[in-house]
View (cartoon, rainbow, N blue to C red):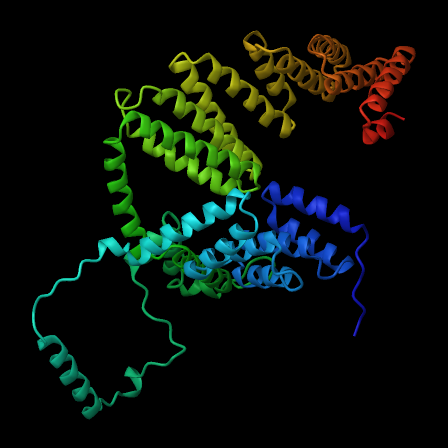
Amino acid sequence: MEAEVVPVGTFPSFMTEGSLLFRRGEYGKALVCFNNALKLREGDRECLAARSKCYLRLGDTGNSLKDAEASLQNDKTFSKGLYQKAETLYTMGDFEFALVFYHRGYRLRPELHKFKLGIEKSQEAIINCVGAPSSVKLENKGNLCFISKQAECKQADQKVQIKLTKNQKWTKNQKPVRNPKTERELLGELYADKAYLEKLLSDKDLMESSTQQGIKVKDLVLGGISYLETRSEFWQQQKPIYARVRERKLRQQRWSRDKKQKPLEVGRSIAKNMEDMDMLLSGDSPEESCRKAKRMLKKIQGWSEDELPARNELIANLYSRIGKAQVEMGQMEAALQSHKMDLECGRQHDLPDAVSRALGNIGRVYASTRKFQPAIDTWEEKIPMVKSKLEKTWLFHEIGRCYLELDKAKAAQTYGQKSLQAADEEGDAEWQLHAMVLVAQAQVRLKDYRSAILTFEKALDKATLLHDEAAQKAIV
C-alpha cells in the first residue's frame, strides 16, 4: 500500500486559503484545502469544523455530521463543533436534536448570537411540522365506533391473505411512485428539466449514441435524473411539503397580524431584525443574514407608506444588506444587482444617503472583480456626497489603487496624495500609512525613485509607530 502523499504547504496556509475559498462560495476547492490541512495536522478540531461547513454547503450531510462529531471528540464544549453539529442536524430535518445542541452551545457561549437564532429557527421548524400546542384542539365528541371498527379491520387483515402474482409483487428495493405535484413543489424551475430528461429516455436511437469522449448519452441522462431526484430528497429533508404549506399559512397570518401592530411595535421588530442580520453577517453566517433580509424585504414591500412612513428607506437599506451578504457568499453578480436596486431606490425617492452608500458598494464589487475603470467611474460620482474626512480618505485611496492597477501612475499618485491629506486632517495614523504606501508605489511606477525612497521611509516610520510588523516587512 502506497504511503499517503504529504501536501506541499503549511497548515496555516491551507486553512487561510480554504477559508477564503469558502467565503467566495468555491466549496469544492475549499474542501481540498481543508483535506490537505488535515493531512498535516490530523484531528485538528478547527479544521474539522471548517470542513464540516464545506460538506454541508455541498449537500453531503453525512460527512458534515461525521466531521462535526469528530471535532467534539476530545472537547464536548467546543462551540464551533456544537454549532456545526446543530446546523447539520437542522439541515437533515432532525429539528429536535438540532435544538438540543443549539441549547447546549447557548448555555456554554450565551454571547454567541447564532446559538440563540438556531434555537428560534429550530423551535419554529418543529411548530411548522407538528403545530404549536395551542393550535391543537381536542374535543370530547363521538363514541367508540371508530376504535371498534379499527379492531375489526385489524382482525380481518390477520385472517385474509392476499396472494399476489409475480407481476404484482413489490420488492423493498423498488422505488415508490413519485408524486408529480410534490416534485414540482420541491424542484421548482428544475422540474421542467427533469421532465425533459425523462422524455429523452424514450428516444432509443439517442440513448444508444455516445459523446466524443465515449460516454453513453443514456448514462448522462440517467445521471442527471438521479441528481435531480437526490436534490428533491435533500430539499424534502430540509423542509417537508407539509411544513411548507403550513409555514405559508402561518406566514400569511403573521403578515396580517403585523399590519395591525402599533407603529412603535413594528419599529422595534424591524430594529431587532436588522440587528440580527448584522450579527449573522459578522458571525460568518451570510446565508442566514441574506435569507432574513429577503423575508423582511418581502414583508415591507407589502406595506404602504401610511402603515410604515420609512418604507422606502428600509427597502433601500435591505437591498444594501442583501448585497453585502451576497458579496460574502461570493455571489458578485447578484450582489451588484442588489446594490443597483439600492441605488435606484435612493434616486427614485430622493434619498441621498442611500445613493452615496450604493455607489460605494457598487464600486467595491467592481474593484473586487477587477473591473477597475467602472469602479473608478462609480466612486468618482460619489466624491461630492462624502461627508466625513475618514470616508474621503478611504475613497481617494481606493480610487488611487484602481488607477495604479490600470497602470495610470500619475492619477494614482494624485489620489494617493489627496488620501494622505484627508488622513492628516482626520489624524488617522493607519490611513496615513496606507496613503503613503500608495503614493510611494505610484512614484516607483513613474520612475521617481528618490521621492519613492523618501515616501517609503516615512511609511516605515509610521508602521513602526503603529507596531505593524507586517507593513514593516512589506516596506523593507
